[in-house]
Length: 149
Image (tube, rainbow, N blue to C red; front, top):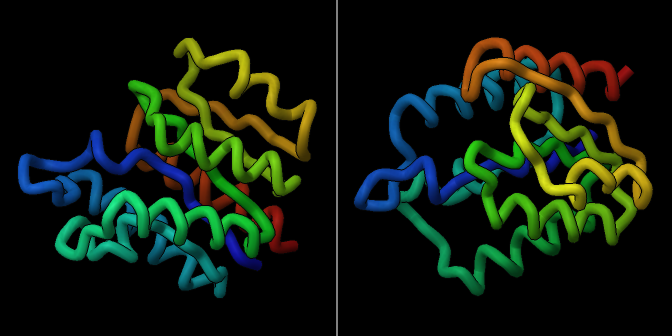
């Protein structure tokens, strides 16, 4: 199974545009588990070496667009605050009829375009309490494992 992890990037970076340690730890926990279960994944943060090999906007756009067309599942965390990039990826995924798992923070207001995307493609909404937490990691991993069965 190939999974695209659509998650905020820019808002999690420091002044040098490198992913802050606490967020890098979060993403590495997810990718470590995905490797264990034999899941192929795409995470822009890792591809760009956590900001050390940042791609230009043109390169990132082209790469992400092409990868989304080739995956089986798109897992998205729209972000708090909402990430514009993740919302663009949501549009690409729905236009390509990709299966979506959207992880939403409980009691946070999301655009009707996010909460209504299920009308366009197979979508499951999963809710969490705390951003970038063990709870969210477990929710993401368990939902992917469920798809792999």
